[in-house]
Every structure is written in structure tokens, then in C-alpha cells.
Image 1: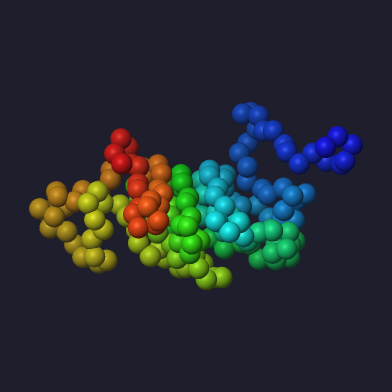
Image 2: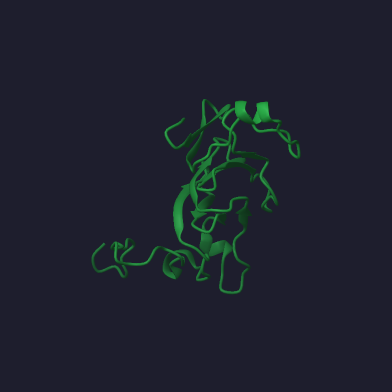
Length: 173
């Protein structure tokens, strides 16, 4: 509103660098995120915000950030399961699960129902047919029948009341 202080919206031009620092005016946080923010998604109850970053991490902010972050507070928790830029984040309807998709050719399913972030994803999806058992080596025939995506996973979303996960990798859904 004119005459009521600083504007709430700032327009960024293509010549400016990508967003890597939260605006102190709006969030109360000034600590850098470490990498450019690629995508973001609000939890269904609007109490958390997932930030997909270029360094392969997903940062979880509790909202309102001003209440949970301050100059001396520890940095917000991060989910570390990707080795390349995270291109998509999506919350389940309940807000207990989070999907992340990455340029490393995988999508991760995270249980974010607790206050502390998980050390590893519940499930790492990078095969076209199904995820092999952890630690199991695929034989030649199994590997041919269940190949790796081979390209970045551009998007991941929950579908039909969170019963299915849809992944978009290359020109395949």
C-alpha cells in the first residue's frame, strides 16, 4: 500500500543473481541458504515451507519463520539425499510425506512428520519399473527389465489421495 512503509513484493530482474538469502524484513532470518532456490512448496497446513536448492538439498522452514529463526538460531534443517539440483518438491495431503525430484536421476520420498529431519529418505526412486531391495545387486536380465531413468527427474507429485507417485523423467511419465 502506498505510504505504508517498505513494499511487500520485490521484482527480480534476470540480470540479478538467484535468491540465496532470505529477506530479513519478511522472515527474520539472514543466514544464507548456501545455494540458489529452485522451487518451493508450502505444506498443506501452511506451517512449513520446503525449499528445493541447486546444491541438491531440501531445506525445511517452519512458519512463521520470524518465530523460529533468529540471528543466533541454528540453520533450518535440510534433507540430504540428492547429488544434483533439486527440481521439484511436493507435499502429501497429510503433510507427513515430502517428495523431491532431482537432476541426479532420482526422486526421494521423505517422512517429515517429526521435528527432526530424517537422515535418509524412506525410498529413493531411480528405476523405471520398481526400486530394488536396498543392497541387492541386479542381475543382467533384471537390470535390462528395470533400467535407471537415465535422465533427470523433472517433477514428482502425489496422485489420487497420496496412493500413487507420478514422476516425470525426460519424455516419460
